[in-house]
Image 1: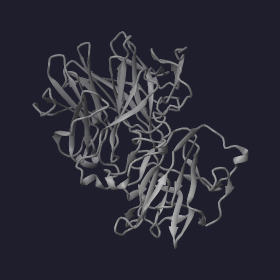
Image 2: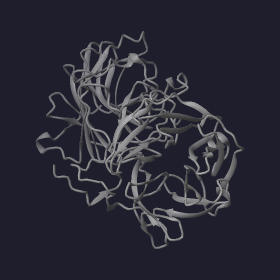
Image 3: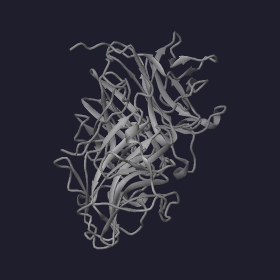
Length: 526
């Protein structure tokens, strides 16, 4: 096979919401994890052979502890920014739950299985931990603070821990206080490294939408630290740029992975070139007029990057529902076996679980994926013949702080195609169209502009589509981007009155125009 090295790559290398990335190289492979908050399974694990093309291969956390606490959607809680390291033949994840403490997991294979999380430090407000096994055999942990729990932020703390990360063995010390640095706010997301006799802390400050990347160094893990700002937006379109990971290649190249906050899309992942100056400091991106690096949009590829088909920049593909659910699927809370019988024979069967809220934001049993950051058409087919309960419903939803969905509802023995939305948490949904009776099978789709607008549509034959004339705005959730999801629900009852809905393969087509002969008709007014 003729495989050619890709001359350049394009940012973001992951155009979807993989927030707070951390990565390591082991041999010729690169591994990445990201925060997952209340979503389950959590802690996505991604693999790459070239730092450009990434595959979501597993999730390290089957359910979020404490299990009972996260049996309901706890938006904004759960797994915040984690770190990934490889030490003594094992992969190690250290992650924070801002309400419960800092936890450790290990595995010999990053695809799993991973050990059950165990607490290293209990307490509220500790976030963004990262371990370092130093050259002198001692182990340290750096972490930040969440003001919402601790009452303060903008500080980085280092503490000595045991080499097996089971206990604290030293006194925690604040090594960097952002209040002492001119213009610094929200100093967080630290990563701790050692190189050339220096202890290095890579950390962003200034907030996820408007901040910058700073590098600190000291001859002692407890400081004092000197610093330089090494990456900022400058005159580019890449705001942030926020926390990430320094990695090297087998041939000695250096790179930095970080995220950019894209609002409704979430936090997408960029790759920046990195080099070391003669005076021993790292430089990132392209040089700016003020000497601070600026993010690149295109750049010569890392060693080993090859041309690899269409420019998807997404670590997941369509799902035919012919085996286990793809790793990119998540629930809004810890899953229960009764929610689904599992995918088989090209269909996914979701139980119409009893719901006393009518609010999809509050349902754990919404199965969703991250929204692609490119214009897309996302579609599936719903079969409602087994949707038995009165007012039972099923659909395809854009889920964030607000939500909108297209699908089916059974009422008075009749199945109708409906479109509904909610912009008020806890409030009633509003009808976007008048319900139209159908025979029980409905094709549904969402067209997006890859930024903040979407058009809902349905079809009874998969060819002629009825679509909203006006776009709906999709919005981020609590620390996460918009998700596109599947659901089935019923009014509160005995849990079985709603029956079930069957979903056929989910398709995601990027950067396409709807064919003229496939032009959508305007949906009837509500």
